[in-house]
Every structure is written in structure tokens, then in C-alpha cells.
Length: 285
Image (cartoon, rainbow, N blue to C red; front, top):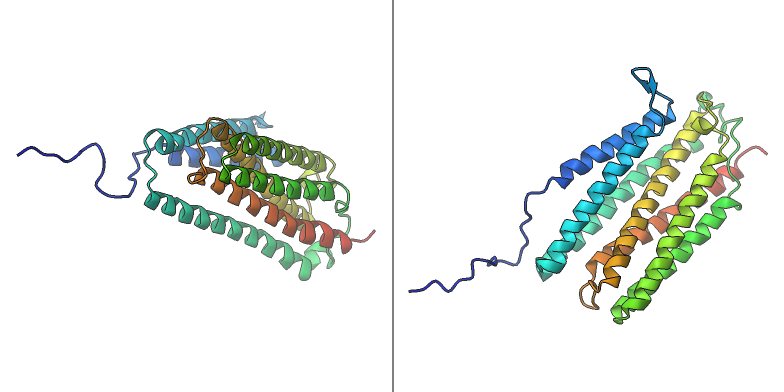
């Protein structure tokens, strides 16, 4: 009796991943980027040669390469192999939710450090917050503009979502292009802001006031990294939208990017209120 079973397709609704090198490569890339950034911020040298931005550039290139290759594989699974069954999509949703929850806890740790030092200042920082000699950024100058940019980008990404739900891919691509542009503008403003910082590693003064600069640059810098990642994520979604990968009933790749972007928006509002406005309000002028 002939075997009528199709051995090319699994007889279960799950998606079993093929062996992939990208988790390991991604970890090595992120480690290289982090180490290169630390060495650059502390003006360290290796074998007498200043590291400078070389380590940062190498780590960034490695991360970008990993992102490109990993996204290529995931898009192939979804579009070419049709491996993302309804059950698989549920798993992807839960995975993205748990990932964002883990990111929330990162920022909880940063806010904990900031508020711990701010609410209970010690002799190490002069018993005041911000420490004497620290000149925080005025929240209603560049930080306020950055806030408006991110809030506007949240509306454009929602516009793109509704356009996809209505099958208007050209309109969705237009909205995504605007969102990506706003993300790039935000990053440029943050780079401009950092270049005008007058505390911590930006002015080369490392002393007992550094608890402020450490918490400030860690929280806002880590958020800035998330903005860059989210911008790349949305840029990928833009090209996928142009190619017609998303339909009103199947567009989780875009939804994941939108969730991530809204998370970035919300975290920035907390940063603006706590680190910028409240920190500036309590500073001696």
C-alpha cells in the first residue's frame, strides 16, 4: 500500500527552527560594541594604541550584519517557506511581549539607581541632587523638542498600522517612511545634546559627582540605543510593506515593531519627567 503522507510538511502546527549561528554571533557583536563603547568613554588604550571609536565602529558593524542576516532568515521563513502557522504567530506574540517586559526591567533598574541617589543623596555627592557643579540640560529646550518628535512618531506608526489593516500599503509605506525619518531626527538631536553636555565623561571630569552622569547617560543612552534599533526595525518594515509582505490579516512583523516603538515612546516620557524636568527643577541655578 502506497504511503500517501506528505513528508515535506510537518504533521504539527509548530515551527521547529533550523540551527542558526545568529544568536551566538549577535551576543559576540553586542559584547564587542559594549566593550568598545566603554573603552572609548574611558579613553583606554590597547598595547599603547588609543582605542578611540574603532571598537565602537567594529561592534556596530557586527551588530548591523547580524541584524541583516537574522531578519533575512525570519522573512524567508514567513514569506517563502510559509512556516509561521497561526500557532507559531501566537508564540511570536508572547515572545515579543516577554521581550518588552524584560526591557522594561532594564529601565526599572536605571530609574531605581537614579531615584535612589536623588532621594537619598549622600556625602559622596555633597548631600544634594544634582550634585554641586552639575549643570543639567534645560528640559524645555532640546529635550522638549525630542519629546515632541517621539510623540509625533507614535502617531505616524499608528497611522501606518491602520493603513495596513485597510489594505492601503502605499499609505502605510508613506507613514512608515515619516516614522523612520522622525527616529533619525531624534537620534541627531540626542547626539547634539550629548555634544553639549557639561558633566561626566563628555567634559572629561570624573569625580564623586559621577553618580549623576552615570545614571543620566546610562538611562538616556540606553534609550537612545533603543530608538536606533527601533528605527532600523521600522525601516525593515517599510521595505517589507513596499514589497507587499503585509496583509490586513497577517502583519505581525509590523505589529512587533509598532509595540517596540510605543514602548520606546513611553519610556522617554518617564525619562523626560524624572531625569530632565525633575532633575533640572531640583538643581541650583
